[in-house]
Amino acid sequence: MTGKIIKGIAGFYYVHVVGMGVFECKAKGILRNKKIKPLVGDNVEIDILDRQEFLGNIIEVLPRKNALIRPAVANVDQALVVFAVSHPNPNYNLLDRFIVMMQKQDIDTVVCFSKKDLADDKKLQEIEDIYRKCGCRLQFISVMSKEGIDDVLRPLLSGKTTVFAGPSGVGKSSLTNELLSQSKMEIGSVSEKIGRGRHTTRHSEIINIEGDTYIMDTPGFTSFYVSDIEAEYLKYYFDEFEAYEGKCRFNGCVHINEPDCAVKQAVEEGLISRVRYNNYIEIYNELKEQRKY
Image (tube, rainbow, N blue to C red):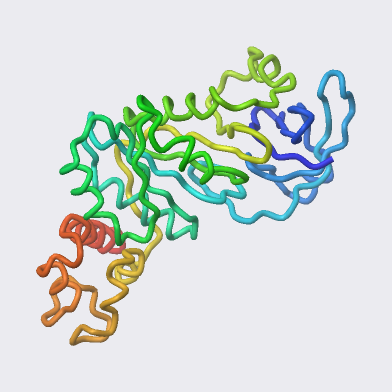
């Protein structure tokens, strides 16, 4: 029987099997002997011990598509980075850090601006002008008016495992609740099992929306430092720079202090967002400082 680990804590793994429910499992000793530690998001083979009590053993961890460190999750298909258009106003610098780190891990990213109902057309256009060339799909939604959720967002999530990320207060929980409220969840006995007293420690968890559609909410971030990237390679994570690669006077131009830089010229002409470019400079300088130590 094949399923997906949706939660792991205290040596127990909760495996969702489509059409059946959630099984409480232990990892067989053979996995420990091979030094294989199951992760939330892993697709696994299980032996069912008791169908009535939803108990089983994990006998094999199937090959991973990818694995993230923060949050600790495997087989992520895409990230949904949620920021509000207002209340709170979007922190573009933080958003750009999310985009860089998702791109570094080669994960498709949807940039989702919530609370669309709180912004006027001028504000929405400003955001679109900044991010339309960032290499990510851009989506505006409103949980309050339901705009963009059932017609756009739900199809985007369908059949995939999606990590939700973004700062506190932007409406991630409201969005998750809205997605769950109109879905038929195959809960099995998960509510009772996961609600037991011993399972109160903070942990990673993914949620089954329906069928093979899963989401994982992450804690709100207020700061986010980009790491494990050489400063000189940061430019490759800003998609709008790509059209100007090779057009600068100097080979290896990092588009900051060099003269006759095509990227800086594009910023001056309004072809590249100055907001994104300024964030690029700040992150670049941070990466150079990190390398000193």
